[in-house]
Image (tube, rainbow, N blue to C red; front, top):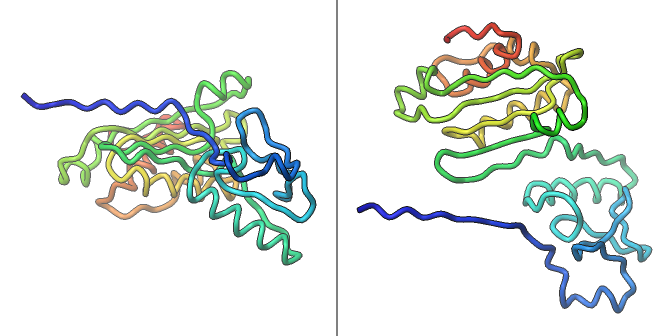
Length: 205
């Protein structure tokens, strides 16, 4: 009999205990995270915080980008980070990746949107690899067609999500992505087909 293992995570906590921040009078929020302003400066002038110590997703790439932005601002330059464009990846099998808003968030915010979904089962490369589980879903603003979110379950999801992230960073549309030539046969074609599906015109299904 094959054993099944279920892993459940209920959340993570900022590792700020024992650092003596309270003795310095540094402000923390209810979850023990360091409060910072838009320049990452704490309540104590000249002391800054980024990454897992502050609010936001506890992801290494988020912390890395914040470090770059902070260094740029300290050097007198204008740093930039769009928190809506930070991808999240779960390295399971199949992989799961997402960026931007979910359908639930869009509905709760009253934002009209169109959704396009395409399965790996209909992709030649995925079939040749024997990895046909999952799909790509793209959510786009109903009026502007600007991509608002992307969600992937399937092979190489952590790599494929980056194409959607890049388009979102440039305020690109589902049409922009759909009209970009993708090499064949590749898994990236599933992303293109999902973009085409936003307007109900996928090619291979």
